[in-house]
Length: 323
Image (tube, rainbow, N blue to C red; front, side):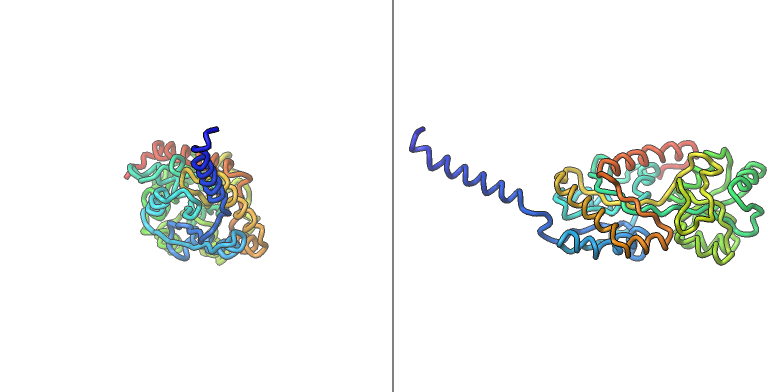
């Protein structure tokens, strides 16, 4: 070997060794930010804020919640998609991120191309409920009434094109029945409209609707999940009368595309460990939720792909106008 070249070779080797040491630095070395597309106090925000303290302990770094509200979560998704794929900015994703792709011409993000799945966290089933004045007590009775009075019954939704709109249209498509959507400015006003009798039916978050059922102001017809929910075992699933029906509010964590696999694995493990905490499980079950951690990031990715392909068919069959 040419001795004149040795110093340069030695320097190069040292540089490579230093670079390898830098790349092997433990993750995380600084706070992790979770972007949330719902307002403080909203469903997904509550999930993340409940998990954040325990997740901070597991990761050894603070987990910060950053609310970026607007466009049914699309604004948050756009920002997260542009973030550096280093594991320090991740997105709390939820059902609307999938339904948006079916009802928005330019959502500004692609849930599969722009992100790497980490894990599902929680599923909050929906509840189909009616005002007591509607002469039905179960899903079969509702379907019979809707077919008898095709296009006459009305149901409330959070807004035109919202997930509550699409969830109900899936039900109508599968039961071959027709009703009229009455969009409100948010799910809260929609519930108020049904409780007051302005509209007689809605399908939405079991957490929010169940108290009205327990008080007698609304009649529970069925939950949207594949299985009965822990907080309301007495309420049958919609699928027991309409086989195959399932439309839940789900929440999970995803990272920008290109995030290293070892970092994704670390975050996935942190989610699993966080959801094992008894106080977290107790809170979500009490509120009507079901813990749903993914066994692997790939499992969550497959679920996201299924959701992305599910809703365009509903939009087309229901004749919903893409915004």
